[in-house]
Image (cartoon, rainbow, N blue to C red; front, side, top):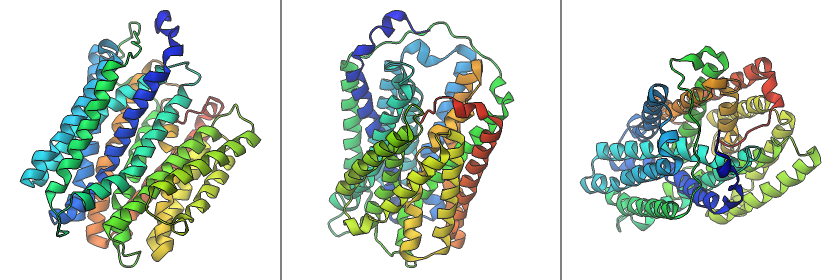
Length: 473
């Protein structure tokens, strides 16, 4: 149990929460920069799609390696963060991520692809530590009842980072720091990533100076063995999380290449990066709407009003960020309306809502595969808004009812982020063999798994539907 003295400090949590939220923003921004690096490095080193997807393989593979090490330590010696403290864990993660950014300088100087992959692996390890520590820390900054709301807000700012990264980061690499003659050069990545490292270190300095509450936990039971895997819904949930992260990352990784296809839109990277922002911006809209829709304390009429206001406000924010006209992004309003309808059909039930969203994404992916032009483009961009609540819903459903195995199960679910490393590799192989458009059959299977998982939980974990819906992670 948390020490009672600490609980009495809850009124002083505003500044620490704002500070950690800034970290979430940078975390999302740098993660989404991978979608800019993939087409850039592909042209720079003349890579196949398979080879270019090693960017995601190394970055998200680090999540698996890092969380596996953490899991093994936890089941043998106890939770490391419980012993060292959340603040030290967060600072270590930031320093590791900043070091990964700094490694882009020698990688770009020597123009050597394996060095880029090594830098991305270190960067991913740093974000793994943050995934384990920062999310849990935010949940402690206040009452347990409002933990979901706080987590959702920090994740919304994480999504804000992923939304502006394609525009700002793409401008830095494709335009501002590119060669004067327009040719591709590895040096264009040196200064941007040094800037990112500097900002991360400034955030670390701020966190080190801000008085963050120190949560001292009681002696925890070290649960040895693999008892969590006795729960069938956890095993299914781990696989569903693997497919979700894999599908989301794969789609985002291929959007620029997809829009470059002559039968789709024939855009160049400078134009495509703005549409990539719409994909990630959709996730931000969906998270705000999900926080409201899955809040069972609100009446249906209040939900409708709040969701309408939130959707309008976030849409205007996205419109002000992307370098596109209103007519070019007005199609997104259709997906917002469809998102409204899907939420209300889901009736604040996490499993049911998950299945509905997954089914919509299956339809959108098939549409992107069989259509050409704007119809194909709109279909692929609309997937982002329906990805929004998937991580949180899968996570919540997977660890439901695990009791003393909850921490162990949570580590296993985090390991499933490995999907972001594996699925894009398979799609890259298919893209080389059959073309980019047909390669989206891989994410189709991913979302089908999620759809079935949602249906499974609706039937066999009915009690989860009556618990408080947690839409943050």
